[in-house]
Image (cartoon, rainbow, N blue to C red; front, side):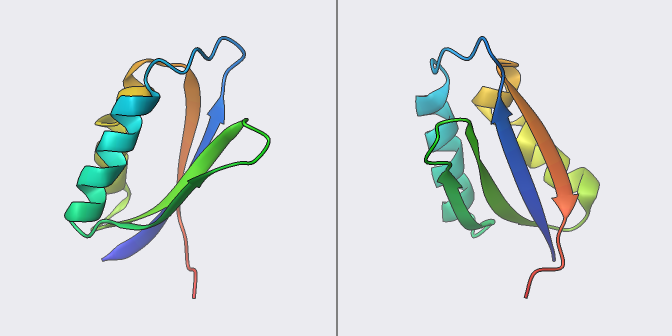
Length: 84
């Protein structure tokens, strides 16, 4: 398994309506032992999470299941991360 950083930045029109579904998605990933770390930025501009996946494509598919991604109110960037 590789490690990926998922960086999320809210767009100007962000409503927050998808936050409950986003949190449920992260809970499901935790239950699957896919999430290493997750949290929002104190300035309310977005957040990030660290996910374990086989490759970039698999990590991107996990992100695509996030309701906040589907609402297109945020910009998501997925990067493989060599964190130690």
